[in-house]
Image (tube, rainbow, N blue to C red; front, side):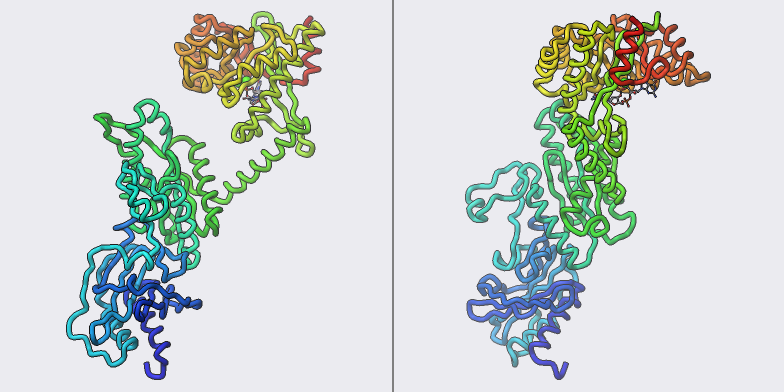
Length: 617
Ligand code: C2E
Ligand code: CA
Ligand code: CA
């Protein structure tokens, strides 16, 4: 090493110290009276270009023995050391005091890693430390005794060196006021699970992503939502719910490494950030492990309970090169997972982003459509089976897009539901149907009862009955002229509440039908408890009726059973999606009262329905 200046040699030694342990980070401080100055710093085995002027109170760094520090022991979350750039989060560090000949501490060498690791091998630093001691205090006597070791886990060299996050509180225990004042900020851990809370988690993730981009590492972000957790709280009580959350937290923690980040993002959502070495299946395997961990039955208060979770996974830098983008990607994947049923795991891909963009664009255009009157209603006639007489019609939304032409409701209703736009759209449709029905009434056209589809979001509004009442009054619609189509899932929710609501509607003279019957889970026995007028047999039961074979026999039996039972309950039975005479004949035989379908009438503009009614007259 001849020819190098002392400073260059010191710098090289610090680099050697890091490489001896295979760690990416090292820093050397020289103690000078009551000050400690940063002499050299190495980040990722490169001498940090912006070696900062950094002076700390020496007392912070005065230690008398080598100390090894693990993030795991304190916070589970790696933390910042002031010596290193703020984006670098340290999971493991060893600090070694450097002494002069008189055994006075003259410096401190810190070697650190962003990954958790074992303590093994830190003695390998001894030779480098001696050389460094020789540089800091030339002529010092050669050490006779081994360097003192004290590798008990402990807090690192004091708060000035370490920006530690305070340790998580014992679950369920509120921090005492003394702890509060000593840390002088709110403890950023979720008191229930002891995990980093939302804010901490997001900050920490942002930092890890920044650090990963500096160190050119990969990360995987997994968002985890417990499926139907509200149900657990509702049916088994808050205490059980809390216990489940704590146990889930524990299981997640056990499923990842010490250096990995686990936090609680919201009530029933957790998040995990792990290093990702880029291997194709790695994050998937982890996510799978997390999911399995949650699926194991819980034993709480003598009960066995099983829950599942939906998971969304996004990878840095493949899916996004910044934190916000990565969060979004993971959330998009999570939304996909939820959509495809419970207990699913979805890894983000860019096509999903495109789908989301298309959807966002559609939502934007839908708002414009509402404002500019591009929405309109078509009416599909309903006929009595026995004499094919027109008895009513269903109002169906249509969107006349200025450039794309007619857009099907199957396309835009889901977007309207997701964005909540379905509420104003539904209210508009209700008002429009009322106006139209009243106009036909005034013209004396026997169009029968007009039905409107109601979305669950609309029905859930506390003022729903009020909205219907106002729409009817404003247009002057009389009893028996309006019908609301509700799906099974809407009425399955809370029987007492729903029954009360339906009774109010009935008092207004509004009929209620159960749409798409047979596709949900409701039983006829359940429906018996609700004031409902019409059962609409879903077209999936109607379709196979004119085909031969097994399918047809099954459909026949089902449609027949539904019709018989519904009639037994005094409900009118309507079959939808009737396309052929054969289907119609089969339905007539099964005792169906009313049919709706392309065979007798497609959805049509209001004018055409009026003409149809006039002809029938
Ligand atoms: P839905 O309530 O089950 O409406 C019946 C759908 O079946 C309509 O599709 C109709 O055009 C179609 N259909 C009728 N007869 C036949 C047939 O013989 N064969 C076949 N293959 N299909 C037939 P549309 O108009 O595309 O509506 C789709 C869905 O959009 C509706 O299903 C309903 O869930 C929703 N929707 C439509 N208008 C509204 C609305 O004003 N509010 C709400 N919330 N949803 C609406
Ligand atoms: Ca319908
Ligand atoms: Ca339907």
